[in-house]
Image 1: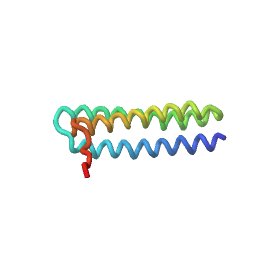
Image 2: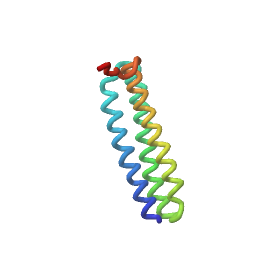
Image 3: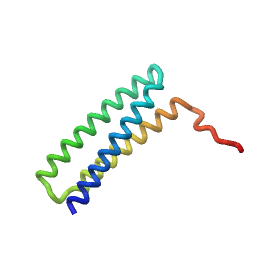
Length: 102
């Protein structure tokens, strides 16, 4: 059971890293105040991810049976990144995505 949770947690961390990279690339197109705010948020998310990775390693050594707690925290961190990405897209295109009227 531990390996299943550990694998899922590592998968979430990998996905979190990919989303941070996506957020960084989207931030490059932002301007002025928006870009500054997003860069600060990205740094905070990176710190949170590093803290989670450290916590995961320590937790794995100390508590074999509590992987769900870590998995839930990582899930919340991933949700934060999703929200940040939504903010980037809404700031860059306040009217929302264009729809094809074919």
